[in-house]
Amino acid sequence: MLIWLGFGVPTNAAENPCTYEKVALLKDKLAACEELIQRRPNDPYAYFNRGLIAINVGDYDQAVADLTRAHELDSGDPWSLANRGLAYAWKKDQARAEEDFRAVRAIDPSNVVMLRGEALLKMNAGDKKGAVESLSASMTDDPDNLWALRTRSELYYELGEFEKSRQDDSRWVKLMEEARSRQARALSNSRQSELR
Image 1 (cartoon, one colour):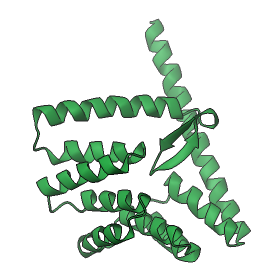
Image 2 (spheres, rainbow, N blue to C red):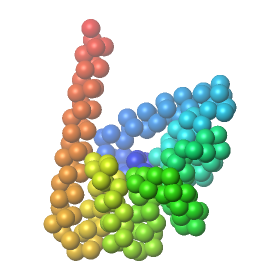
Image 3 (cartoon, rainbow, N blue to C red):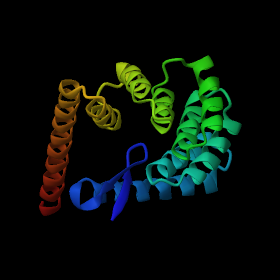
Image 4 (cartoon, rainbow, N blue to C red):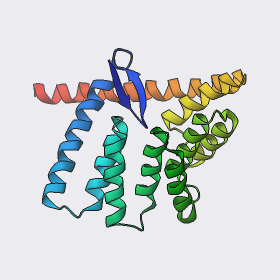
C-alpha cells in the first residue's frame, strides 16, 4: 500500500511507522479546512492549507485548484504560487511550473518550495547535477528537510559521489530516529494521561 508523505514522496506504509499517524492527522486537517471553507469561503489560508494536504496525498489537480483559489484571494503571497508550481512539477507540467516559479523568484528568490520544485523539474529533465544544486540551495534555509536530504542523497549516489550520499543519508536517518523518538514519547505521554 503506497501512502504519500512529504512533498509527494511515496512510501510503503509497512516501512514507515509514522505513516498511519500522518494519514490520520491529514484527515483531521482536511476536515478542519473543509469546515473553515464552509464558514469563510473567501479565506485564502483555508484553500492554501487544503492545497498543501492535496500535495501530500498526491492529488495534484486538487492542489492546483486550491492553490489557484488561495492566490486569487491573496495575490501578494508567494507561497501559494510556489506550492502550485510544485504541484505542476509533480504533474510534469514544466511550462506552468516554470511560470509560477518565475513569479515567485521575482518576490522571494530564496523561496525553499520554489527551489525544491525547480529541483524536481531538473530531475524530470534528467539534470541530476542541476537538481543537486537546487536542493542544496533550498537546504540553506531548511537544512533538515527530509525530502530534500533523501532526494539529494539518491542523486549524489547516482552521480557516483558516494561520500556525499552517505553523509546526507546518515543525516536523514538521524532525523528520522529523532522524529520516531519524539513520536514514541508523545504516544507514551498520551497513554499515561489516559490512565490517570
